[in-house]
Length: 327
Picture 1 (cartoon, rainbow, N blue to C red):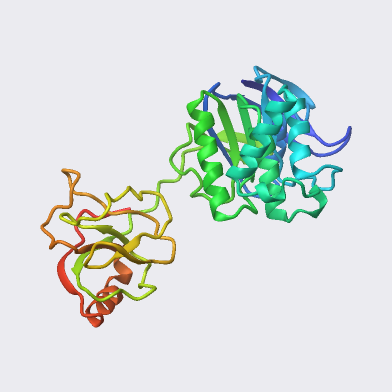
Picture 2: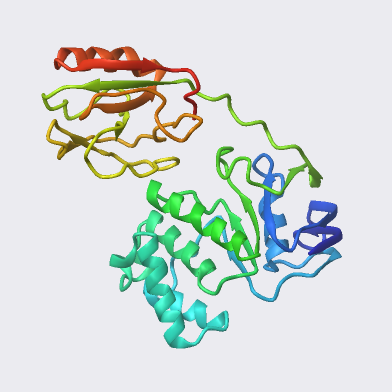
């Protein structure tokens, strides 16, 4: 897709929002657009999606199946959530049955299935945003344009949108997005452009934040742990544990069972840990632990408090290490 000396102004005599924009966007890949508020990012996305036409210059090579999530969703429309998605699916070339099935699937994925029959005007802002995102994903677009699409979504829906973006990329589509959070899909963009004073320039992506040091604690004991631990550490069975095989938690935000000496889950740790156990170079924990022990990985800032709680609950500290444990 190519933009050749594209400019956009509002009205015949209005100020220019964008001027002399020349870009070659990949047919497949992730493109991030950055810039301060009011610089023309949304105008650029609308031009890419074909919502607006350029005042000057031309846009060529836009895929026939293009989808767009606006910064503000027009919720005051005479549809229920499901009927709106079916209508948009039909507009995008789906049959009625396929559109209805996909509408239900996407509402389910974004946690909004319970609002399928709710009129759009009665939806909360967050649920409206879920519908806005769902309509863009219904028909497997070859170009997906997202203008602050994550804003207003809850944690689970934001993660689901991240996954949906990656699915479109895997399918060979192009995704262009703006988001105020610099951590959003950080390091994954194939191209990054900045908008400033009506001009668009390629820029280098900001380096990732330094890794946060973690501490890995191996402990054993027979008393149940408190319902909440400092730092909400991740727990996994240590080597020799007879419980279920530990699943990878990398990137997840879940709470794991805390097994007792009998290897059954006694309770679940609340909170949302950000990462899982970091294995050694051989893919296994690089030390010996007693059967029934727990391996807890926690931010170094919380390690002293966690050790204090474990000792207070008469747990034995089998092993403590921090080298090589990073997120």
